[in-house]
Length: 251
Ligand code: PEP
Image (cartoon, rainbow, N blue to C red; front, side, top):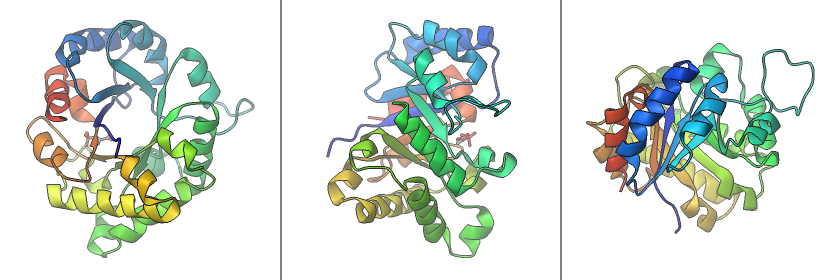
């Protein structure tokens, strides 16, 4: 098994380029000794400034979305190749806010995953159920389905560039965290889905994060679970000390 903890911050639609540089400069010394991978996924317009600011540090840079076409008449979109050409390494795809507010479907998530891999990016693929679905008892089905559709056409070799983030929608930005047991159960289910699609070795090597109101106080318990290999952090990633505390808990 070769998986390593990955802690990724999703800044969402926050921070101007100048504010982003300030945040990175505060974060750099706090996470310098991290034993996990540290990623910040920032707004498109912040990417050049943040890439410059992280130079010489252990912080890696991601985007929060990409389009599936290389170029063309897609006003307002950004291609995976454009991100790669800037020096971006990671891209979040299928975040529940994209699914909820911007019409993202499992099929478009799959197309974006394909494009990101083709461009040489590593994908942080988000899956997760709504509260209603959890109450209906279909969490496993929803998460397995989202995982299977998103990974269509992804080869076994390419799975080394896929990170999966289990993010129950009811826990995102709500302050309601899944219990460590709930998080672990679904992360394990996603891992067994990957084993059924590929093989056990690939499943064992895939990083599966939990996301949803993870913070400095609850990170250690969540990260101690056998199938939770890191976190995708929204709100707390905007607070350097809190994000650094989560990074420190990932060991
Ligand atoms: C997220 O945006 O992916 C997220 C998990 O947000 P929060 O940590 O604020 O719940």
